[in-house]
Image 1 (tube, rainbow, N blue to C red):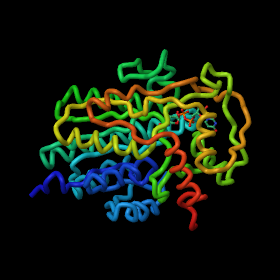
Image 2 (cartoon, protein in one colour; image 1 turned 180 degrees about the horizontal axis):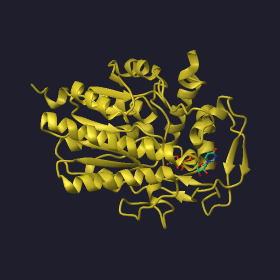
Image 3 (tube, rainbow, N blue to C red; image 1 turned 90 degrees about the vertical axis):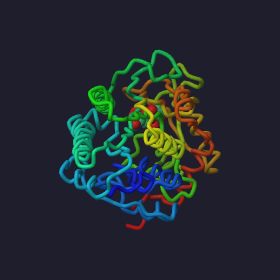
Image 4 (cartoon, rainbow, N blue to C red; image 1 turned 30 degrees about the vertical axis):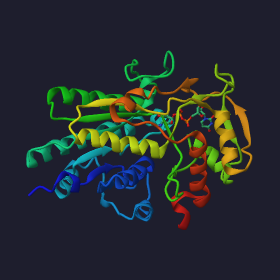
Length: 351
Ligand code: WQD
């Protein structure tokens, strides 16, 4: 006997990670049970306790590697998910240049493994779960202009972006071969911030590559100063401009996309961004206002691979899903600071 769709869980691969934990909270808020699939290679089991504290509901947990297709098939048998959100993967651009095979294996191999498990489950139950795929704005490379719409040319500047583009293309091919595949591709701009409770947040291992967690660690005393990678770009103050998006806005975008597919919407691709660009120095100033401390910085050389400016045109997501970002840069910084000040060493605090 199949449970009604509303009682079947949404499967979150990588659900204990930064985006995953916030998406789990947003799914709970929307009334969806969740099964988290995670091997904790880039996350911490303590996240599940924090999710339960926030939402009063604990997600089911399946601990394992999405590359293990046989195990993943057993997960589908046990949970018969109403939808799948595929977040499990690796996303450090610099690391992907140094170790491209790891990125091809995990990001592309992991997605193939998931698609095979979904196909096997369909043979068991006679229906295919809708799939939401976590992609990235870096598939646009260096845009010829801004803001960026979904029909812009696609390319890649790093093995990381290459893997995301390949998976997008694989999903497109599968959808063309069998219309029963319903896929939402979400191209993230720059997710930052944390749930307003400060109980979950971004917890990068090692020295942060990204701006917001690095600034946050300067504020809490884990880093001495910020290196601003170039102040000679053709932007408002010479520093890089990006479309920073509150992670809870991003999470709510996942819920809207999942619900649209579950309601019978055809496959689609949307940008998830605010449509507003902020420079590095504007982020520093906003964070100083949020934390009440100076953020010392030095101008350093440009980082290879960086582009001057990119930000989204989020009009399609608004029109198709009724979604738009609701939180501004000030809230992104204050929520990021709430998380960092409550958890100076991230989830490893109590270890
Ligand atoms: C933002 C701006 C830097 C750090 C990357 C990935 C992308 C996505 C988000 C996965 C730039 C400047 C940064 C620092 C700095 N990840 N900066 N000093 O590069 O836009 O995007 O993360 O999906 O795929 O490419 O984000 O936060 O690294 O940089 O001056 O210590 O901050 O030059 O202008 P980016 P970022």
